[in-house]
Image (cartoon, rainbow, N blue to C red; front, side):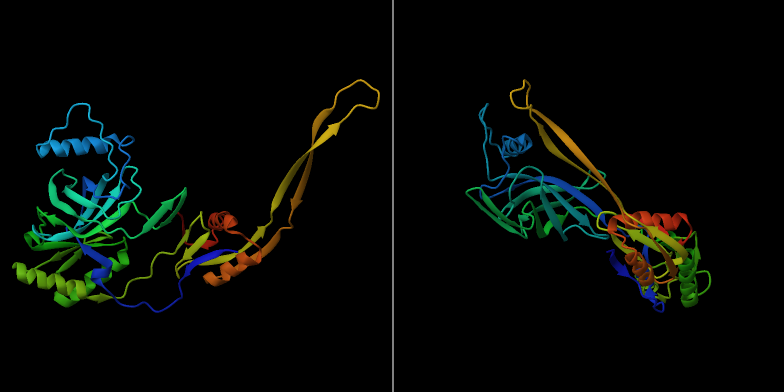
Length: 359
């Protein structure tokens, strides 16, 4: 049976806000990353004999604190884990604000539960430090092991610290430079671009907005920063009726799930489906010599080949709704493994009026 992930029902288009369809160029988050240590683990940290970078990090940290280990010291620590710390720096974030961080083990630590992240610099793509992270981890899981048995719920090698990083550097955002901003649609659509331009010009006057292409819109803003912010807020709150989306069919080849939007249609076509299976079975055969005769017992293999072919069924598929298409494919006994080939064949034949995407 085919698994249908989601089917859209034809409904009248509803108005959506411009802020849900587009974003302002330059107003974006920035990814931060850092390398650090989690301490205080209850014997569930890295096995330092297999993760030499953990030992190197500990030695370097101790040296910076004025503690020099004797040469040849072999550290065997079980309460420390090397981790990668990631965070997202929001737009307009200022020094002193706090952001959430995610801490992930990069060694062979069994669990980060109960650990404390030591002060870790968070760097951006330019190599500059934009935040400092430190705090106690919250791990959404638990586990226990004894006598070779183990029970684990959720992942224990990833934790999160709410408000665990402090912003140290702001990312400059030039909003409204030269009294102009650019709106960027989430997806390229000339119809929606035109409708947004018409809505803005209808609200603020002709010439306020102009389409640059199928995705970018240039909008003139007031001069003052306070007036500019109020103007952008009004623009984002404008409602438009989005144009119908492109017809699209998405197939997950691993699970057999199918997702179609309401714009996907199917022309009349015929589909033949049949299965051919070849079964080969081998069993040993023992050959022994006759009584009072010279010879040796010989073991041979005897193979049996059986070919099974189900009768193919020719089914007419005609209809524009997804329910009818899925019902017809189920009627001919198509399995999730057959789904991809059937849809590709329908697309090649020109019967599937939609873009086919395989994930």
